[in-house]
Image (cartoon, rainbow, N blue to C red; front, top):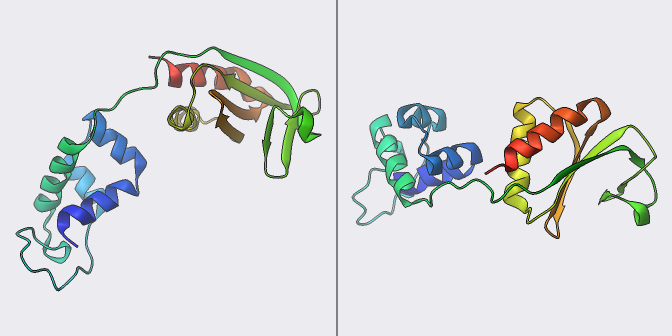
Length: 174
């Protein structure tokens, strides 16, 4: 493998760095150190002018990161902020009545102490990723999460409900 290929693969293993490259907010030298790209490479390379990973000094990884960043699409936050609502009192129950069902877990209203934060509109997996990242930085523990049919649901403890609503609104704001 070439240094460029190994660098791109290493970045893809760290979605936060991938997004930071897309947003243009990366210290490339620090990113190169973080990735610590090294290892074995294909010895049968015939005509590649790029150094192998084994030969890669930090500056070469920095250059590979810059080239990769230039090739990435610009970072875009999710579209218009969808309406966000909160429903408290969720707990386990009948899947037919579930606000959220994942595997054997079905969370229904009036059955417990969890709170569901729901965002409508055109929520998708990218929006859920934004929301989960924002909740993590707000130190709000997520009990369950799902996205589908243009809606997004995250379930948190009752006491975290208000903070979760603010975090979800912030994550989905334009």
